[in-house]
Length: 218
Image (cartoon, rainbow, N blue to C red; front, side, top):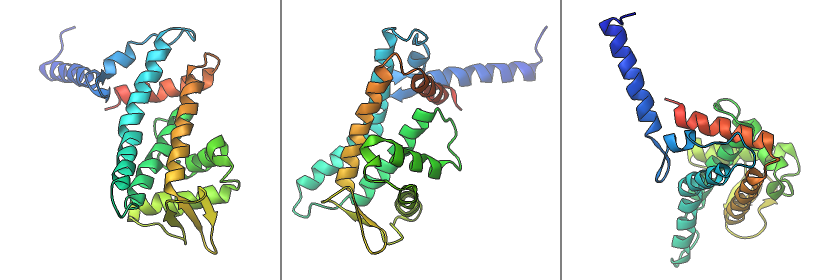
């Protein structure tokens, strides 16, 4: 069947859009087509090592490396504690990113609060500090939403650079952004170790769902 000029134009444009998406870099030096070409159905396949390495490069260059640069920059200054809000803003983005990959979510709209509650109360690096779900929800509301939406922390919360990861105050908590970041970086390493385990079938499937969405979404 011969396509009409309009249909043919739409078909060609669709093909170009697909090619453009596959040519998109999902991590420095890694194009979407490379990920989509990985053979990941075999749990013991060698491509899983590359998959985790690509994921590591994506997360590290987007989130962890920028925070590390800020921390090193602080260490070189006389007034050292300057970038707490920026550090926490980036780390909050990473919390939501990691939880989305863990759950295989391609759309986190209206799910952010639940994702933070689950991450902070379920991940071992944080559950020892956020023992009550309401504390995790308060972090989401007053720190995550406060910084990302209004450029301030609210509800009596304070950003600090020393002491425990969180410390109760008369109202709210004091959060040590350095300890928070270090725990988050360690959690990322834990997650990668889980992904390398061939028995982590659900976790791997969820991660693949999210990454394939990243590679193909318009």
